[in-house]
Amino acid sequence: MKKTIITVVGKDSVGIIARVCSYLANNKINILDISQTIVQGYFNMMMIVDMNEAPKKFDEVAGEMEQIGEEIGVIVKVQHEDIFDMMHRL
Amino acid sequence: MININEVIETNKMIEQENLDVRTITLGISLLDCIDSDLTQLNKKIYDKITTVAKDLVSTGKEIEREYGIPIVNKRISITPIALIGGAACKSSEDFVSIAKTLDEAAKKVGVNFIGGYSALVSKGMTKSDEMLIRSIPQALAQTERICSSINVGSTKTGINMDAVKLMGEIIVETAEYTKEQDSLGCAKLVVFCNAPDDNPFMAGAFHGVTESDAIINVGVSGPGVVKKALESVRGADFGTLCETIKKTAFKITRVGQLVALEASKRLQIPFGIVDLSLAPTPAVGDSVAEIFEEIGLEYAGAPGTTAALALLNDQVKKGGVMASSYVGGLSGAFIPVSEDQGMINAVEAGMLTLEKLEAMTCVCSVGLDMIAIPGDTKATTISGIIADEMAIGMVNQKTTAVRLIPVIGKKVGDNAEFGGLLGHAPIMPVNQANCDRFVNRGGRIPAPIHSFKN
Image 1 (cartoon, one colour):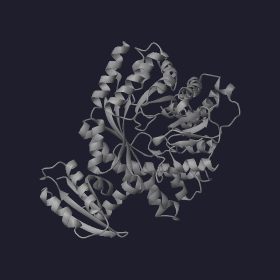
Image 2 (tube, chains in turn orange, purple):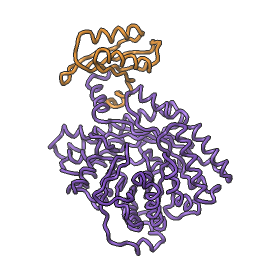
Image 3 (tube, one colour):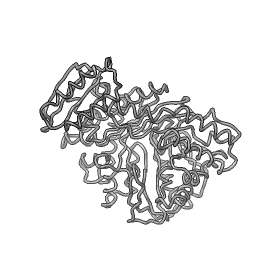
Image 4 (cartoon, helix red, strand yellow):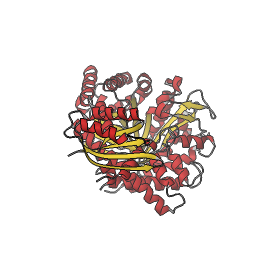
């Protein structure tokens, strides 16, 4: 199963996680893990998700997530997990 | 499972420290295009390139999107054209027609450069080699995306001094033909010693005859990432410094390996090598000179610079080798002047000279790169500089190269503007002592004693 990493970075505000999660639920994307932290005053969230059941293509999901990010004033990035695995795991 | 700090670290490298895949270079053999009829040859070349590379750019964009890593350039390297055009070309003009075909093919598939308008003449020149070399000024003036490279020496064969002399003249002529654009043609022309067959970086990329029909080579870069990592060990000893560079190089190269394998799979073209080269760009924070500054030198060129570069180059290779199953190309640190803001600053402050750069090329991964010199520099002087640089490569069994730009109409103190990734460069002074009699001797310099390993 190819996993996908979603990161959300920006100023903390009410409803960021709710907005992102409802998009994922509506698009049949399953959340496997969520963690969040504050780095230099910025809200950082990472989700590991499974997109295998999602009817939409990766490019479309990535684009729509970025759009949502813009609407709520945070930066949303969607990336395949491999790039992190390659860099940090032997 | 991947944790949030690792994700943040990777994305910080990409977003703030200019980590990128500098190029996916698709190597294409044109050996099966050879034909004695020039029209047929041009047609076969165009058809082959536009067929094999038709999905290169779109695949690159897909990978970029899915992994969130910029892939700055998608490029093509081809078999040295002197070999391909030999049967059909009766004159230099015939070779120029091939250059135009290549340019059209490059535009059709959407790559920004195509490398391999080349000849390998490290021991001697065939008629075809010489015709190709003589066609370079025209070819570079009449095309946009062609890059040319000539290998004039190697540790195994010695240095072809006839070719060195000729290349001095060709560089001046190329400068003259492109003088309206600050002699830009010379930025696309490299003279090599020990040129690698699988280098993905321009302007020196070509697809060697030892390679298969098509191959994917990937070049990764990230001087900014190394600089940033070194900030965290400021003041620590050399052991710690080297370890930090090595670990960072490892991480960067892993990204290259991933992109190379993915591109290879999607294009169904075998994976060749990953080339980890710290290749600077004019952007702030993407500079090799800034790494020297972080190591503890006021400017690139200060006493200690050669040692700093030696350790940097070596640690980059050591980290890279562990990270990829096949490391190749040039792998190391590039020290171009015009493409590196820190190097430009050092030259403008009078802290970096051509002679110091030459010393640095003994330990860097390539050579005298993107250096603007006065437009009235004599061809023999350029040949003398090439001969020196080739000797360094030959004796040290390493790749060396010369990419000098005599900027027509400009003198020391002026500035040349090349634009984009090629940057701008202050015109550097050149030693004025005469070397005509040396260059005009002709013939070749024999291979050094340590080349006899049979």
